[in-house]
Image (tube, rainbow, N blue to C red; front, side, top):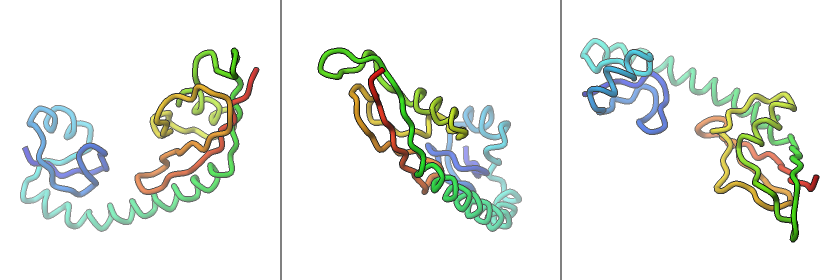
Amino acid sequence: MQIILTTDIPSLGDAGDLVEVKPGYGANYLIPQGLALPATSSNKNQIEHQRRAISARIARDRKDAESISEKLSQVSVTITRLVGDDDKLFGSVSTKDIADALRDQGFEVDRRKIVLETPIKALGVYDVPVKVHRDVIAQIKLWVVAD
């Protein structure tokens, strides 16, 4: 089934792209959620007109993301954990912990936007990337200290 995406979907493509998906995924999820349109000839003509509006929206979203990124880059987050011998943490610091600490400072960040290769299991200072927009990544300073 061919559809036209109306929003960016990381696993499929960007807004305005014509993509091929399985019929059930397109008809039962993407189209009812407003994430896509069926790829009819009238929708193809309409999307060409909307492509300019979509690109303007993407540019505006990127500009907003850059301003949020500047604010986030100045943030320093401290998380305290119990430690054992050799300064090893009991447990670890996950993206949920970082998102909660950012929320306490007034930043509403989805934990899935915080990029950690593996959970943090040692004391120290870390630069943690936060994906604000598909092209904009902010770096926050994370301090993991002993309780």
